[in-house]
Length: 333
Image (cartoon, rainbow, N blue to C red; front, side):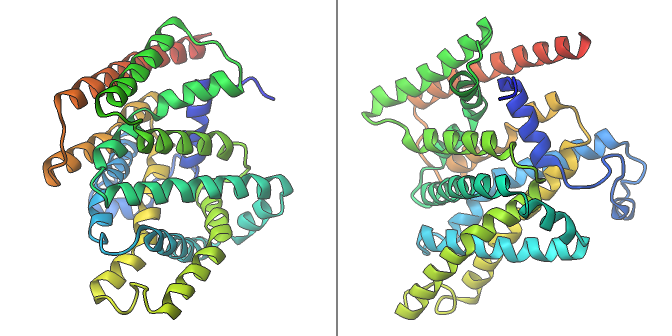
C-alpha cells in the first residue's frame, strides 16, 4: 500500500472531489457575464468554494421543508433525482467516454459498491437527524471529520502522529466523552456521520474517477433499490410524491439539484485555491449548520455543549495549524 499520511488522505479527498475534468486555469465563460471576468483564479476559486460550503451549511433548511416525508423516502428520491441530474450534466458536457472508461475498470466497481453503501448510510442518518431536531449533533459530526481522518491514518496506514496532532485528537475525544457522560448516551449521530464520511473519502480516493462520474456510479448502483422502494410505497398509496402538494413534489425532485450544485461549485473552487485555504473554509458548513440548528430551529445548546464544542474546536485549530506547518515544510523540502 502507498505510504499515505492523514494529510495526504484529506488533500487527495479534496482533489478527488474537486476534480471536474476541466483545465483548472480556465474559468467558465459565463463568469464574465456576471462581472467576474477580471478576477484572478484564486479569488474565483475562493468565492465558489465559499458558495459550496454555505449551501451545504444551509442544507438542513431544505430537508426540514420535507419533514412530513419519511427520511428513507427522501433518501430514495435524493438518490434517483441525483442520478437524473448527473446524467443530464454529463450529457451536456459530452463526457460519456470518460464515464465508460471508469465503469470498465473492474477494481472501481468494487470500490463503488462499498462507497455507495457508505454514502447512503451517511445521507439517511443526516436527513433523519435533521428532521428529528438534531442538527447540532450533525454539525459536530462534520467538525470532527478531519480528526477522524487522522484516526483512520493511524489504524489503516499505521502512521504515527506528531505531538500536536495527538493533542488535537485527545481534545476532540474529551469533548465527545463529556457529552456522553453528561447526557448518558454516546453522540452516535455525530460519530457515525464523521466516520462514514471519513471512510468514504478514504476509499473514494482509490477509485480512478473524478467526483461527478464517481457520484454517477454510486447513485447508479443505489437507484434500482431506491426505485423499488418508491414503487412499493406508490403501490401501497403511502408515498409522498403525487398525493402530497406540488411543492412537496418539487422539493423531492429538486433533491438531485441541491446534491450536485454544491459539489460542482466546490469542484470549481478547490482546484483554484490552496489546500490550506480549503482546509479552513470547510468549517463554514458545520458552523452554518450549528447556527441554523440553534438560531433558526431553537435546538438546545447548553453549557455542556459549549464546553464540548470548545474542546473540539481547540483540537481543530491545533490540527489545522500543525497540518499547515507540516505541509509547508514538505513543500519546502
